[in-house]
Length: 339
Image (cartoon, rainbow, N blue to C red; front, side):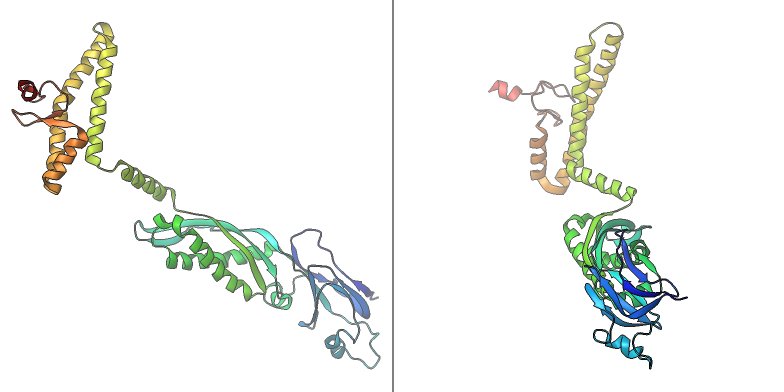
């Protein structure tokens, strides 16, 4: 025996239900029944697979006065008190926040600096239903319950597809990613919003939390930043050699003259002398290369930067302040003393 429905309403207890179909199978709705639509809800009537009317928040009596489309479709000789079979879809029109999106697999990107690389990206977004009938007809179909999880994968697919387009149009290399983040985010939101509109959805908020290259590419970026920080590689190598001589000299002073410490000090001293003769030649070679590239001015600048002086006898370079030439043994600073 059919049970006539006289009050139709629905309350979302989960907080993430987008659509609920009322009633269950084989239930009859009586003309004159009360339809109660809560705030932030819409109700859509369906019969024979067709949407007939949409109702906003409030109390609605199902009579020929306020639902002429329904009553016209259901007019019977026996009058309008006859129950009829129909589906009522309640739609939650609130904003659904903190929906996640992200690349399950890295997306390819042609980078002008690193050639073809793969990028990962993720973020979050917020949506709400703006066109109840369009959303049901294009997305929900005949489902009796539709949750946000049901649409999440579909919307994520749209976002990832548009991400590829926007990156290709707004970014040449990931080295410029930081300065283009706002443009990429705004462009992607505009593209995705247009796609969501086709399904009766509004993209309220959209955020990109990160776009990251693979670990090996990140390592290359760090190495490039380190090289830029060093600057002149030749000068840096010479500085490191000078630092090594200083450390060896310190070891000699601390090692003493006897025992194991004395042996270690002697070894350090020998290495120190060896480096002392090698270093001027290293500097000479580096400055000769600079002279080849930048002329005498480049050589003068290099000498000033390293604080070296030229031996008057053999022309070898020595640290400024050295008493003897490391190459020929000539006493340095003699010219100044004779004056």
